[in-house]
Image 1 (cartoon, rainbow, N blue to C red):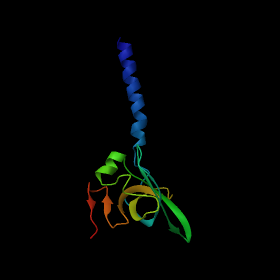
Image 2: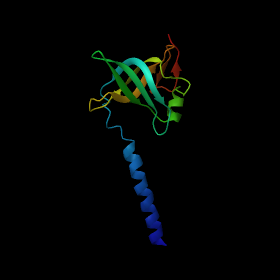
Image 3: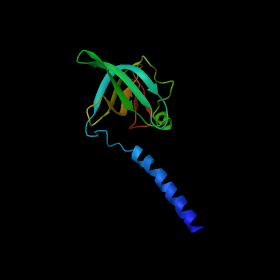
Image 4: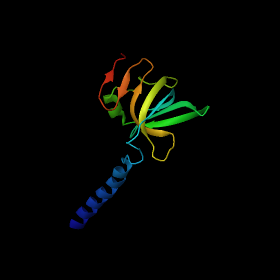
Length: 129
């Protein structure tokens, strides 16, 4: 019986390791911020992380930035729902950039077309001033 208990405990511990590794934010440079203004090309309100893709201009050519957000429950807490953001919306988004220089980052704050700001730093949607 003890062997079965140890085997079960080991199985639980081993399955937890990928989840811990997955949630590392080491790929983002939290000492820097990048702000992009552009058009939403994709908004995925999914588990385990939401995604906001924004097309902007870079050296005269279109460039798409991918920003990782929280899980839907976390995004809802800061005021972002599937009805808040749509493909084609013009937004300004700020995030921590990827360390390797690719066009991506971790979502911090965005300004919606109506001027409202959604921020992960505060669990509120602030009205336009």
